[in-house]
Image (cartoon, rainbow, N blue to C red):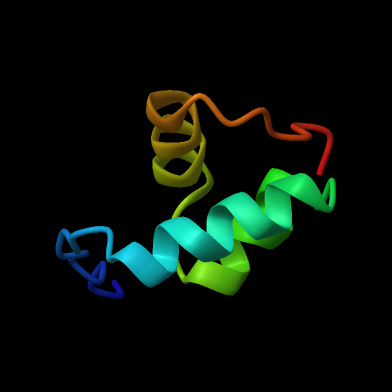
Length: 59
């Protein structure tokens, strides 16, 4: 049985937040934003909500 890789929590840097806002403004999907930031879709969506940034949740 394969061991599950344990993820560690990473703090959001100002550059991460800047990139999140920039990609959201370009209407990039949440899945692609999360991949670009190397974060989960959930973490990306929660941070966007905290910042009041609207995301395209379709992909």
